[in-house]
Structures are given as structure tokens and as C-alpha cells.
Image (tube, rainbow, N blue to C red; front, top):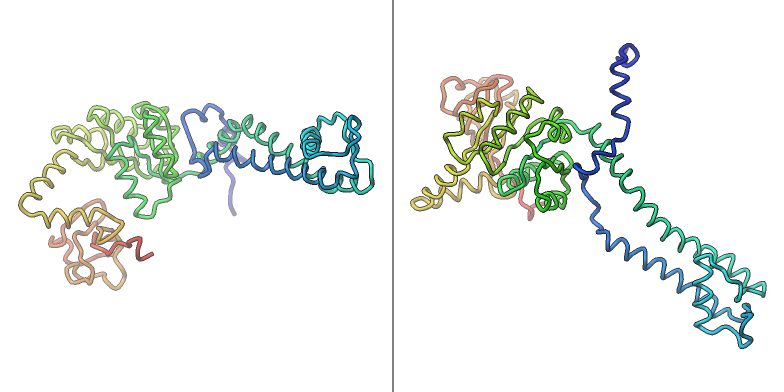
Length: 363
């Protein structure tokens, strides 16, 4: 028997009602991925549909001119008169100076002109209504996303480091809608939105901004800011909101690593020193750097991945497996492949190994 806590707990019922209410204030900070069709292209397409209805109506009237009468001209219906009639007809203006008088013309008006009139009106009125309801639609879409998103990844900062982190996540198979980018730079957010990512405008050191990004329900947060002091503040705020979230932070100076760890970061990457090591290694052993770059790029070549130990591998040594194993994760600890503690694999262990990455040419 499944017990619904909302039946017995008024607070749960109130929380559900609050989540169900659309909050228009989220439309500004949060932006959902937009359609691939741009607004100018969409308007031009609707304008072409309306003009097509107008031209088709004019041709129907012109070729059936014998069935129409112009009260101001006894010489029949010219092409200009046909366009004039179609304009005032499909726009429902209807001055009444040109009218269908024969049964055939009235039948054509009923079967063809009237539907074209409706298409014309729906196209332009629909555009106006869509523009007026866009904010409400966006608010509803955002609220629906927030009520469903769980175990997503929050990227703070969409500069060079943030973009590389997103590329890696997408290369590992993450869904774009499960990645939320937080930044204050509108151009960076536009670039993230073009990739199909959800974006939040605001300073990530503020708890209200991280709450909008859903950090309390996220699986991980990547702090890729340009300043180390900002990274510390973001880490402190995120750890306070989500005590169990995995926080990966980047710093420029190694002397700030302990500050990030004390603030609650699980992993700290020193970007400046890491780049410096690769630069130094490239001067003497460039092939080593190429291999490292290959392992860090999930799209092609080889990549470092993680998988659970299979039942047939329990009790064996990680050095004797078919895969190239680099390390073993047991609980919260990481052991190198040659560590004596992992000479015999146990159930629940996870292997860090080198796998062949799928390339676009192979798909």
C-alpha cells in the first residue's frame, strides 16, 4: 500500500500547491532552450502564408470574374479589382462594392475564399496572441522544468573552462536540458542557450540564484569562475544549500586549493599549474601531451571512463583484466592499480579504465 503524505500533512499539501503555481518572476532570470527557428524567420514564414492566402483569393476572384459585380465599374473585374476584393475580404473589412452575384461565385466564396479568410486571420491574430502570451508560456515551461529536474549539473561560469566542461558532459551522453549554466554575461548565456542548455542570469554567490538553478536537487556543480575568491564564495553558498552535492571547482593559483577544500569542494583543479605542466612536458615529450589530450577528449580516440566491477572479476587483480585499468575506487577512496589494497577486487568496487571513445565517423 502506498501512503500519500499529502493526505496527512498540511505542509506537504501547501508545498505542492506552491509548486503548481506558475511564477512569472522566473521568466527574467531563467531561459529555457529556444526553438531552432528564429523569430524573424518565423514571422517571415507567417507573412508568406498570409500573402499566399491573399494571392490565392485574388486569383479565384479574377478567373471567376463573370460571377462578381463591381457596383462602381460596369466593365467587369480586373486583376487589380481582384486583389482589392481579396484584401478587403480576407481582412473582414468588406466595403460591399464588389460582391459575388452568381451561384458559382458564391459557391467559390463559400468553399475557398472563406477558409482562406480564416487562414489569413489565424496567421496574424495567432502571431499577436503568441507575443502577448509568450511570458506566461515561458513561466509555465520554466515551472514545469523546475518541478521535474533532478540530478542535473550546474555550471557556474561559461567561459573557456565552463564550455570545456559542458563539451565533456555532452560527449559523455548528458542531455542538454540536464545542464544549467549560471552566468552574468548575456553573450555567454546566449551561446549556452544555442547549445540547448537551460540558462540562469545572476551572480552565483547569491543563494537565491543557485536556488533558481535548482542546486538543492542537483547531482553536481562545476565552479568555473575567473576569480578564485568568487569560486570560494560560490562553493560556500552551494555547500550550505546542498550538503551532499558534489562540488568541482577550478582555481588559478595552487595556494587557494586549501580554501576551496575547506569551503566544501570535493575536487579542485588548478587550471594555471595544469596548463603549465602540459606546456613544460610538450617541450620535451610532445607525444605524452598528445596522449593526455586524447584521454581527456571523449569524442574520439581513447578516453578515461569508470565502470562497476563485474561479477566474474570479483577476487581477481585489476592488473590482469582485458581493460587497461588505471585505478580502483572503493567506497570514497581512490587506489592506484598497483596498490596492495586492491590486489583482489571486491563487489562494489569501480574501475577507472581506458576505453575507446566513439567518434562521429563511427556513428
